[in-house]
Amino acid sequence: MLASMPRAVDMKTAEDRLRRIEAVTDSDLAHLSSEELLQELLDRVREVLDTDTATILLLDESGQYLVATASSGIEEAVRQGVRVRVGEGFAGRIAAQREPYLLKEISSNTVVNPLLWQKGLRTLVGVPLLAEGKLLGILHTGTLREREFDEDEVQWLRVAADRIAVHVYSQLTTTERNAATALQRSLLPAELPQISGLDFGSRYVPAENLGISGDWYDVFPLPSGRVCMAIGDVVGRGLPAAMAMGRLRTAVRAYALDNGDPAEVLTKIDRHVRHFEQDLMATVAYAIWDSSFERVHLSLAGHLAPVLAIPGEPSRLVTEAAVDAPIGVSSSTQSRHTATVDVPSGASLLLYTDGLVERRHRPLDDGLRLLCEAVRSGPAYLLCAEVMSKLVGSEIPADDIAVLAVRRQAPETPRKLDLEINAVPESLAEVRSELRRWLPSVGASEDDTADLLIAVGEAVANSIEHAYGPQGGKVELRLEATDREVEIGISDTGTWRAPRGAHRGRGTQLMRQLCDEAIIDHDQTGTRVVLRKRLSEGESA
Image (tube, rainbow, N blue to C red):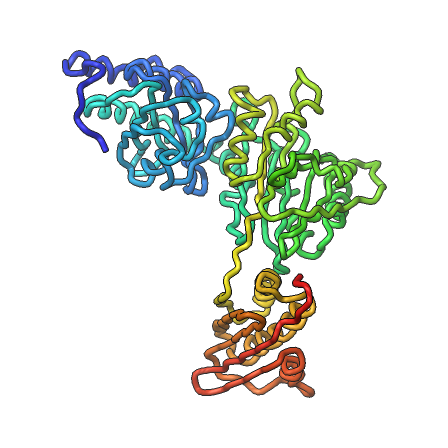
């Protein structure tokens, strides 16, 4: 999308071209620090091309996102931790196609970073940052007025990008920097999980010069179908704090596997830390969603309360959750508490670390009030953008900031649903989780749901145990709801083995007792079970 247009800056003469190339290859730049060099290069880009902004976004460790790393004229992008997925929007397109791109309409339809249209930019041109054939990120520059860029100007921007890419690449190949960067990035999720019914978003901004910190967040599903969220802040800075944060995050995941009560999980973590890591202290907010996603169970270890935003209501702090002692406080002997919070469809929950709201020049209560005013339910990534814009703005963060947002999406109610699972015992939890969400949505009561969980569980367990040998296989489920009846088919393509042990066959009996009809067919292609149950007239779950 680059056309030959009248030149805004005369670059025809060889002398002018040479001067403009030297502007980004000046040997004096070699004496600057990394941060100073990038800033100087961006300032020169603006000066040479007569533009209003210039920004560098670098590819993160996952290779899926571009992260604002340096900027001139729109420094908020760096301070708010702007992230753009490769392939999406203006910057993402440049990264995906590795070609220059000119954009003359800056709006929510063409770019994904709200700061760009909020800034009032009218024109953007960007080029990829490439070194030895590897994509490092992108460089873009923009104007607050309508502006054309000719081929010479775009070519010069590519020269500037090459100069920047050489510097970035040399920094990334430095052993110490690589090790520190890899550690920091590995301790935060490269990608939040895709979970039907929940929409997640996050931001992470370290204080000042992108140093390593102890703030962290995490989202992970459990075998039971529940979903866990955690956010925390380890006291201290630098590599020791980051390493402690990594151990704490791992401990949360480990204890979560065996405990469904957030307070119990934090109690075990606290006991672990006070015994094995007596110098560690941290705040943690830990939440578990019910499999229906209608409620969240929350426990706070010295951490600030989340903000709940329900459409049509003022956003508020979740004050029903008691704030217990931080993790690692040696005098802590009091029991911890779990609060249960109803989360209606369309509502959002925001977890954050104290760097978002604490400022030296204002009381904490004022920061929390501003946060509640900024939180509105909506897409999670836009909620994060709005909160960072209102609470951080153009400030240089004095403390690390982590933000984790989730919106409960309006449930889809498919009358038909197809599932395919691996024929292993662990897959039973996945089946139960899907049934707990789907059955109430098609009108099943609590009793109906309980009966079908048992009946379907028995049919699936039979396929897992009998259909396949050590090589394994697949089990397919088809769920279909009519007016007041549910039909569930369970099929495999295995050759059933004889039951192991005496007194087997109770599963088939349970299926017939709990359903109105249970049909079991065996042939050379496999086994198919069809369960039909008329739904009761009672209130659905």
